[in-house]
Length: 217
Length: 140
Image (tube, rainbow over all chains, first blue to last red; front, side):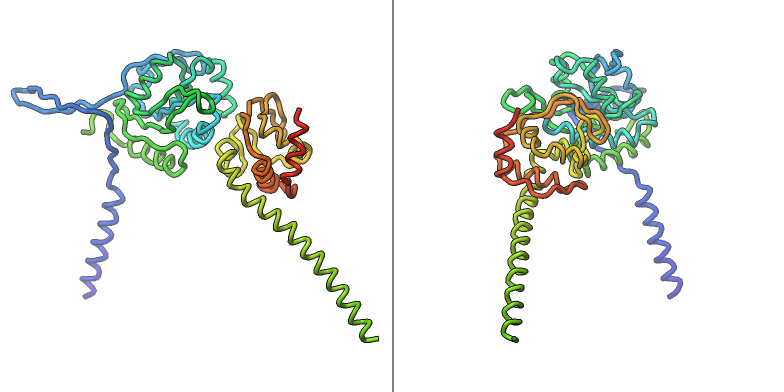
């Protein structure tokens, strides 16, 4: 009887260990297409996932930033504008937690694209970053052509933004934080106005960091 | 003699009772303003100023500067409805942003201001709808 109890305890402990070490694998978002090719005489079907396409913007320091600067990095993207009176302050308050968690790691970045590039010049973005207490290169505020930004938002990051003179501030946009992996694939979208979801994001970045850089199918 | 004593005691009790009920009327009014004010605050102010009135870094000032609120008590209504622009010093730090304007009815404004000026470590008492109407008519 004692042996049986001991066996049960051991099994339970074993199972507890197993669930603890089990890795969480985040889903891959966006469209995908199967590609069939012949490798070494064998037909292999591979999947090509949607990725963030090349772009070129300017950050708050006036440096030119392209998709190349994000090669091999995990990053979180959002869309905002500095004069935004509605959801931006609460988004940035939550994003600060992501920033504080990963600013010194080097391989995690935050990208905030302005959807009002006409007003949000490099100077305005720098002042904004300073006031927010953001220094260094872990969090970039990017300014680029409006059309490019909107297209990137809707087609690649799958976040809706639009100019709307009927709302305060002149723009409507969704407050999503979009998580992008080292291969530039969208791996998660979190409501940036919701502290619990942002905590989940901070957690999910951890699991993403453990993924090998080459492939997760 | 005993009757006289009795009358005096009853008289005193009536006075004490009147004062007590008076105070609780004030307390009731305060509670009504304060709890409704929390709802107004959540829907109109909290996004920027935060659930604890903490503000946002150097961008949005906190609402915890009791001295500022006390000095500016009579222009708070104007600041909220007309917005604020230019430099202000809050808790010894300079803020130079823009607060957007609002279009709150005096009663809602009074409730929100009562909530703010009696939360986050502030204790300025009730700001009534009548007071707000008076303050609004004197906006610069």
